Length: 292
Image (cartoon, rainbow, N blue to C red):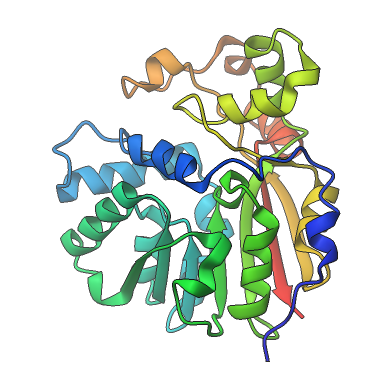
């Protein structure tokens, strides 16, 4: 029998509401610029292109493979919510998992499908176009060993509905859930407030949304504290770990040209100290939980 999320998780968010933003607006935003699509200068859609996209993503976000634990899911069923152009999806499949990958953006999903075909992994991945807030309307409810979503549900109008869908329809007792959402108490949020917001803290929630991504103008971005993340998951899950990761240290002007020069104030910080700061003020709030 599937676990049921308590209704209290819907009410106890203590966050600004983007709940009235149409889901079509979110879809249009990500269709216009699929995430990480410019991670390679090579011929779009070639194997070299996809290999370079993966290499760059994990160079900049090296914590992802350790968090996802790709090899752990060999021979098991993985549901990925918000697969984007499929970097993590491919690595779950490559490690031997049977993956169901859902995505709101038509453009992103087509790139992910092409990627799986180019890399010979289409038989291990079931791609579905879906709104995660109504996931059980798009895919058959069933128990997965892992439900994984990295940097996605904070862009939905009602993240609590995504959690409720997962808890009611796609996990059983002992299923693992791994999610990344953005960290409200992070260097990134401070940087947004001081540079883009000129200190206008009363506008912070909308400043975060607009400036959360490389392509400005995201219509929705929630950012969570540890306590807020616990409230989001509610009583349906036993939280095993919450950890903070990822400060982006590079100059944007160099990074977009595939050079990796650090911003001056990070350039002189010793690596151990940078890592210490990153584990406290990182942008990625990563949670591992188990369904009760």
